[in-house]
Length: 211
Length: 211
DNA sequence: GGTTTAACATACCATACGGTCGGTATGTGT
DNA sequence: ACACATACCGACCGTATGGTATGTTAAACC
Image 1 (cartoon, protein in one colour):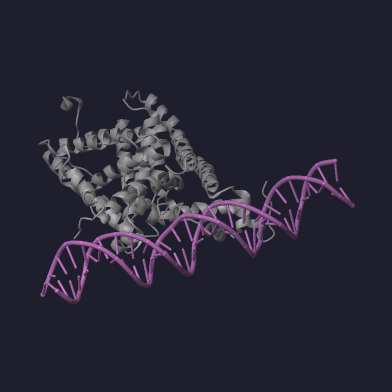
Image 2 (image 1 turned 45 degrees about the vertical axis):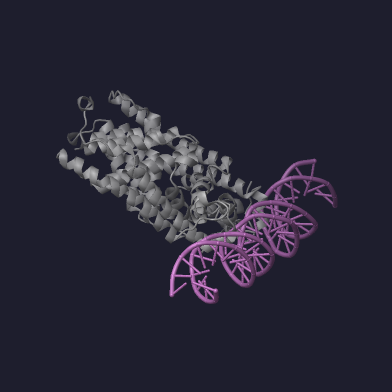
């Protein structure tokens, strides 16, 4: 039950502002390098407010992962790639959409929960699990289309819809890693072209089909 | 010029022991969460020794990335996947090899420079660049085989050898991210199966060829 | 209208951190 | 023999860190 604050009722509650700050700062600096004071400064709240809303820094990490899951779920649900009638077209539109939103600064298009999980998977299992739920919850949204496309075309395969959905995520996450290491967003886009080609192959899309 | 130490001449110099400790601890906890004292304790050296060999913690990060590049280069150069006469077979053997070495604890098979780059890319450009050199230096070792395989088979493609080599790395790195998020090494292996299938497709490997 | 409660704010604390500094032991070249 | 360099030791320092204790304000509930 958030309540409008006196100083900035329009900017959202302190809790939301802290989560927004966490999203931006952790993506840029990593979780351990982001201090509680950093977050309070960015969100323009005091430490008292921070520890009122979150029991610890780790608890904020968990909350940030859930917040990421919520906001990205809404973002992808509202995205235009669901429009095509053919499920395979929706899958390819998804890949194209993922490629299209790779722009601007690296910290702005990369994945919070991927970064976070990679960093804290061994030392903060609760944060890791929250990240896992966000990632695999997202892959699950692709499975229905993959399965439908497979049935539509009578594809007999040694791969499952779950597996291909996860692979899609792996390519995206791996592209982010390369983009960061090479300091070049194009490296992330490049792998999505290979993924697109791979998916067309799995569903036997030929040159003639493309027209 | 390392010199045998009094207390443990057989364990290698303090510098090497610190770099080994850095490899293991940073992969498990991340760079920022790894303190200089952690490293000194694990390497059984004092803080004086640490700052004698490395000007700062960041300098150790850079050195660790170079050390990783050196040791992995030697490791992959000595690996058996170079044996096949056909370059395409070497490429597929590489993918199979990468899959085979995914075993044991997650921190033992994942990539130091991938983790490191992802964490510090924005705040420590020198570490990031060292990681980039390690990753892209490794992808370069695949390019010759990819190019040779393409020429051998007269493949006309809209992808380059460099691009496919980088995509291979992206799939591996992305698999590591998923393995960490899901706390399951199988997630990393799974994507390598898709990569294998994709490469066979690019080089027109049919079921009959496989025999 | 009084009490409770959520939502902050402020001052403070113990510790852990990266880094420094003066010193010592052990070669090494002349 | 002596100067010099390298490798290392360990006490110390200033600061930043996560976290706490106490206080304040204002809306919500009875």
